[in-house]
Length: 559
Image 1 (cartoon, rainbow, N blue to C red):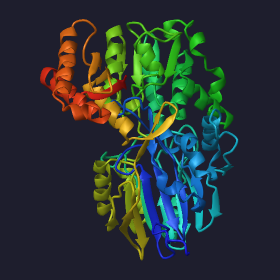
Image 2: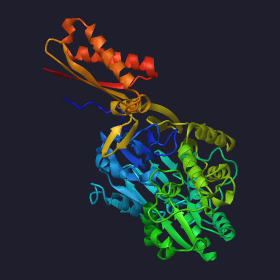
Image 3: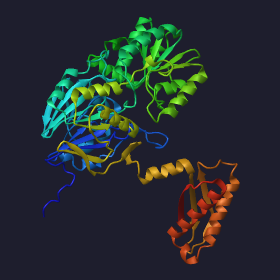
Image 4: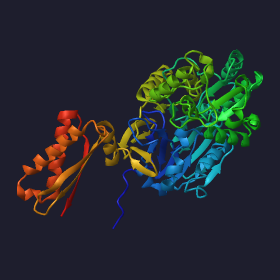
């Protein structure tokens, strides 16, 4: 019997682009390129849970589609070392089992994350030099170094027999990046002369006029600002922003202060940066324990927690729960980061806690120079398109509002073809045109303790119901003839207190007894029928008296 043809196998006469994450959203980047029956994956990232995903801290794309075709997956290429581009590797690689290509700093970050995982030692990581290239199957891939908020960010020039696609990853144009090399502008211009079929591009700051700014500006701002602050200084930023850590270190030294690192991820990332030659200042950094011994006017603390993360150092400092350090009135916290959409509430909670202590807060709203974005604003996007002159632009890495602004910008640049993708759509590039050729299974997986679960499954649905409506547990004993033995036991979880609501519990028990009494005798011997009746009775009275429809479980024991 002949094997059924896979309708989602990339054809010979077109190049396919398939985002599984990162289109229509910021974070969780994962993209596939397909041609001649083979797939190339670009990035494998995560996003993070919030109040809508109780118990879930890390979220990643559902990779069922490519897992079922992993024999046709030639490699995973990682553009740079941010969590939203590589954070899912430790969870998903066992389902992919493909080689990983990355430049040295990114490769070290991947190894560090895999060190405690069950795939440690199994993953084949191929390090490429900066601006390196390789060929595999129908793909020729070239890394083009660009500046970002982490060393060794790369655009990818992906060439097949159908032409070259420039996958931008995260980038900006910074003539003075402070850490790492400046963007390889000459190579981008050469690619433009050779001909670029399409750009699959970062849309994060497509709504922002002007230029993203230089890290040199942040360094100069820190030097001046630190000299004006008389007490303790705390700088919070992403742990991967090595240039920002170095800017804080340089400014601290200029103002005769010591730099203290607070947060395990900061120590890990800066140590790797030192190993790769990017942060010689690392050897002079102090631990939080040593930093606690310094006078308040002699320390600059760099800590994690700029997004209000529950376990991060700044959150614990604001709550007075850090083991080594304690903030005091008059200290200053500098937010050297941008609010990621969706994190406004946790950030506000931490900031309110800091203000309650008497800590001064400085954000980019009060002083724009304390942060510059790592993503291209409109002037930089325009400059890129002047250099590479693509026939087609496919905006990714952004919400729909960012993607739409990106399309409006490329129209002003004279580029006529664009297509806004959504996760799961197959975009076919054929004959110099792009169109939607189909859709595949896609979605989200959440790390729930040690289990990886689809976020649309019954477990998560039940958890959300419990979160908003509470739960009711009913235990009852019945004889084989259908008579209730003793009174049912009821527990109302997340709804009522222990003593004040005994009347409500009595009302629920009575409602259960009445409901069973009204059942025909023939159905009382059927556990499913009894459970259904009890569930309806509980939910009815809870709706009437509490305005809630709790998740209800009924346990029946027959004697």
